[in-house]
Amino acid sequence: PAPADELPRAMELIAAEGRGIVLLFRESAKKISSSAGPTPQTLKHTGIGAQILSSLGLSDIVLLSNSPTPTVVGLDAYGLSITGTRPIT
Image 1 (cartoon, rainbow, N blue to C red):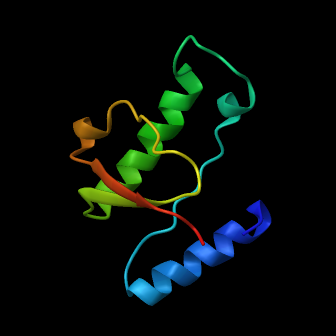
Image 2 (cartoon, one colour; image 1 turned 45 degrees about the vertical axis):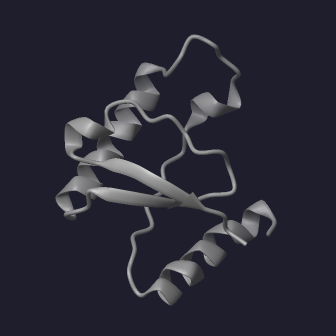
C-alpha cells in the first residue's frame, strides 16, 4: 500500500489477528542521514514507546512494517524484544 494507507491497513491486520497495539512516534532523525548513530531525541522517543509497551504487559513484539527491521537500542532494559516483522500488505 501507499504510505498514507499503511496505518489503516496495519489496523486491519491487527483487528484480523484479534490482538495487538498501534503505537506511533515520529522519528525526525530518520529524515536526516547520519552515520553517528541514534540521537538523544531518538532514544527519548524510543524510551517513551518502550515504557508504554512494557506497562501494557508486552514482552515479545512482532512489528508490522514495510521497512527493514530496525535496530532499537535499549528495549531489553524494558523487558522487550523484537521477535519478527510482518509486511503491511
